Each structure stands twice: as C-alpha cells, then as structure tokens.
Length: 412
Image (cartoon, rainbow, N blue to C red; front, side, top):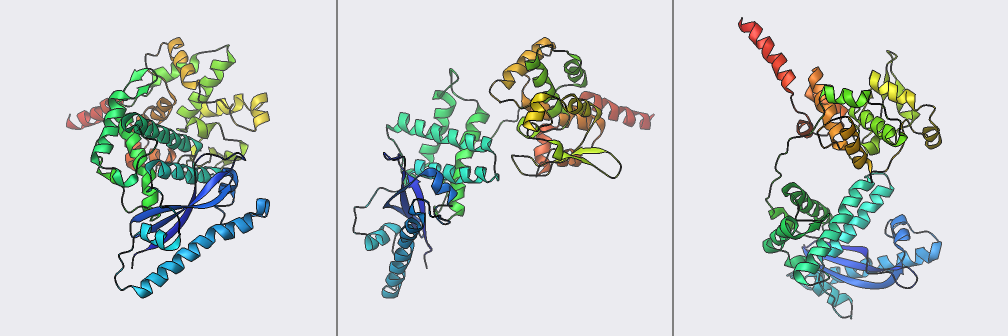
C-alpha cells in the first residue's frame, strides 16, 4: 500500500494584517500535491504553536487547529474508501486531491517552497537552541542564491521540483563559478561553489527523511572540495601578538578574544557566551572551562592554561563583562576579521588572519606540536569524527625534525 502523509506549511506573502497563508500538502507514494486551507496565521504563532499542533486560546487557535487538521482526517478517510473499492492502487497525490476537493488543481511542488519550508523548520530548532543562528543564516543565504539563479537563468519566480535534472544542477554550478557577482567579483571559488550546492542537498534531505519527497536529485552532484592548506600561527607569530600592547581598546579586546580562541579552540560565538558557570574546579584543584559547541552541541572541555588564565583574570572586573555576565567581552562578527587584519599588519605577520586561524593554531601549534595525541585534540575541539580534526591539524617541520632526530639516534 502506498504511504499517505498530509502535512501543513505556510506559503506566500503576508496579507494586510501581517498573516501568512496556510497550505496543506498530500504526499502519496512519492507523488506530491498541495492545496489551500483558506486560513491565515502569523509566522511567529505558527512556529510557537508547533504548526498549530500545540495551539493556545490566542486568536482562536484551537478552532483554527481543529479546522486545519480536519483536512488530514477527511483525506485519510477518502483514501481508505478508495482502497476498499479498488484492488489496484494507481492513485497519485493529485488524483486523491481531486477526490477530496472540488477546486482548481494548483501547480506542483516547487524548489523554493521546499527550501523556504526547510528554513521555517530550521528556525524553530534555532529558537529551541538545538542549532545555531549562523547555520540558519547559511540556509537563508542559500534560498536567496537559488531564487536569484532561477530568476536570471530561467526568467521564472520558481521552479517545479520534479523538473530538476542534471542540466539544472550543473547549470547552477556553472552560474556560481563563473557568473555570480560576489563582493564585486564575478564567480565563486571551487570550494565555495561545492559547499553551496551541498547545502542545498542537505536542505532537501530533510524532506526525504520526512517522506515528503521520494528522492533528492542533488545527490547526483559529484564535484569535490579541493584541499587547501590551513593557515595557522607559529609559536613565534603567536608570541608577537601576545607581546603587542594596544592602547586602543578596540584592538586590545579583539586581540584577547583571538588569543582566547587560540588557547581553547573555541569559535568566537562559543567563547563570547561563556560565563562564570562554565568554570569548574576538579579534584586536583585545576580549573576547566566546560561547555558544548554551539554548532554541534558536542562537549568541548578545556583545561585553563596560564595564558588563558591571564585573559580571564584581566576581564573579571571589566564593566562590560560584569554587565553582560561574560568571561570576555562580546563583539559582532561584522568587522572582527577586518580588525584582525589590522592586528596582523601591526605585528608584522604576513598571513591572512581570521578567526579560523585561531582554531587551526590551537590544533597545530598549541596541541600537536606539544605532543598532544590527535584523538585528544579531537575531543577538546568538540569534533564528532577524528577526520574533522585532521583537516585542522598540520604537522610542523619542528615536530618532524624532532621525531627524525630520535630515529637518527637509534640508527647511530
């Protein structure tokens, strides 16, 4: 028997009262069809009520929920009646809709509708603290990119999901690589283009799992990431930044946040959310920072090294940290990388200094160069797989020389 699933989502622009239309979707044996419920609700209430599954008395949400989900019962009932009367089940979602509603048949499910619905679902997970707002920003950006591509290449406002084929996917790849304007430059680098399309595929996988679509056409995309050498600071370069005195608080704070990341492996968003509750003393009287990474929710505990202790003590009486109940000051990502470039210039470091460099520096210079095993580094960095750590960690020449000297002594 073909599996039937009826779900509901919001679609379209707001009406004059700021409400958004509620639509239903019939999924039957890999075929899809949508229908209008004729009802509206604000996006905020739609999310807070878990798609009207947990309604409140606000704006008669109970009666609205009963009305919306009565569609599910009537569709399931009509499907059961059909199965009793027909031995062969050749029914599609569109056929079932015709049996249930005496209305004009609407267009098939579209790509932008799916991506938009994914972001609505993902936003709910962000609100509950299950995923990071940075990941949501990434998916919102992807929706904009696909919308732009369809408009430029096909002169359409949307694209039927069932029409997506290899030509569509690789046309998108070419558009990203050679035609998309990004910060005044035409075309994106290979890795950026590949990540963009992989993100789209990831968004659509959600609907495969939910049983809303039967297959993900983007899985045929086979372009690979090109491994790029990770940028990290050597011990000498790290010391240059530590020893540099900035009278300007703007640069001084950015320097300390960067060093904090270097000695913890944390991303700035993780570092700047820490408070005194994250400081824990063990049975040996050693202090730890205990937290979970915002991106993966994986435990990432770090022993407080002397350099880290200095930074924490520096800001324990800082007015900004006291007011915000933080270990270190909070700064937006908007200009932080720009300030890091300024710090690199002032310290005479000829490298593109970004926040990613801090994480690479921890793995390579702080940990591996001091003989910390890779699996321990992986645990500290909050990685789910050790292959993730291998991307960050690079063996330095000084480590190779040290190990080769040991080998040389054995032969002597």
